[in-house]
Image (cartoon, rainbow, N blue to C red; front, side, top):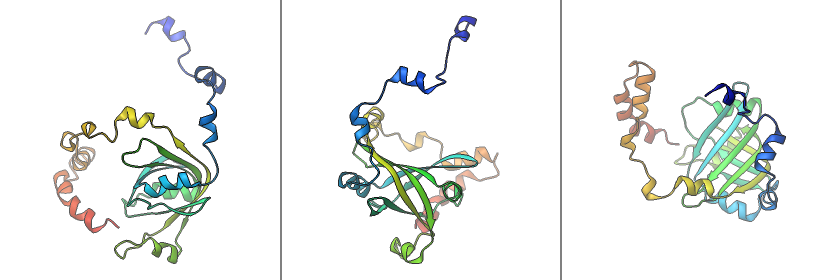
Length: 211
């Protein structure tokens, strides 16, 4: 890169510059955003087995995968969602952010569908015994339930899913071509973690701690 190129503006610094580049959203991009769950949006929530949960806190941002049987995120009413906090790695990054700040964003995916559903709102963590028990699977209740008040909800168009070929059989990657969790732990710990043992033990460990 020469001196002339360095002197050129390389970054967008203001909203005005951004709008000059992208323009304003069309009516269809705005009318779809509302503050409550309508039947069409409920259909996607009830069909979704996977949600990306984004939170913010003092240490920064976090985005966590959440998955279960379709409809695991329950609709309490048109303004409220309930999400069980299933077993995980106990880092509690998302939960810590919710306790301290509360802002959340969700992205619902439905296998086979290009349409995704986005929710922005505020969350709290409930340990109500009756509520937790209502989410029990195989006799095991979640330790908590995330209660999400909806500020906005809207669908996202299918371009990203189509570009990524996410659901196409031919786009699948052979897992054997990627590093395993054990491989990564072995490298990151400089051999202190036995990666092969970790990978070998994981299926049984996961089966015992799925719920």
